[in-house]
Length: 89
Image 1 (cartoon, rainbow, N blue to C red):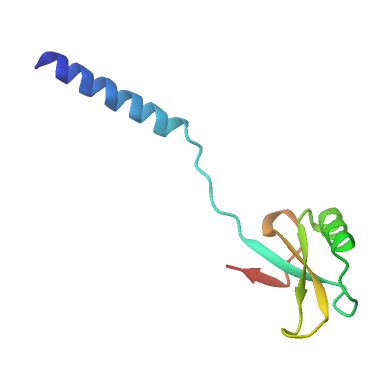
Image 2: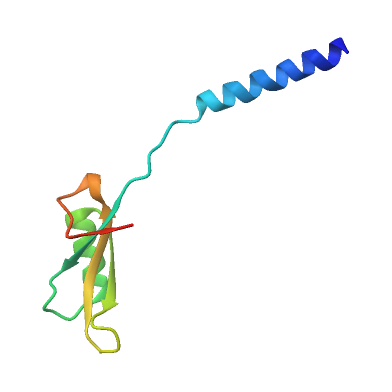
C-alpha cells in the first residue's frame, strides 16, 4: 500500500512539473489584406510582396467567384503588422 502511495505521489509530481513547464500561449488573430485589388494576381509576386510587407502568406483568390480574375490576399498575424482590412476567424 505504501509503495502505491509513493508511486501515485511521484506521478502527480511529474504531471504537475510538466504542466508548469508548458508555456501559456494565446491564439493570435489572423488578418487578411487584399494587395493591389485592381491587378491580376501573380502567385510568386503576391507571396513575395506579402512576406516583405506584412510577414505573411500570400495567395491568389478568385474574385468574384466563377470569374477568371484573381486578387492577391495576404494572411498574417494581426499583432505583427499594420491594422487589418479584414479579420479571419
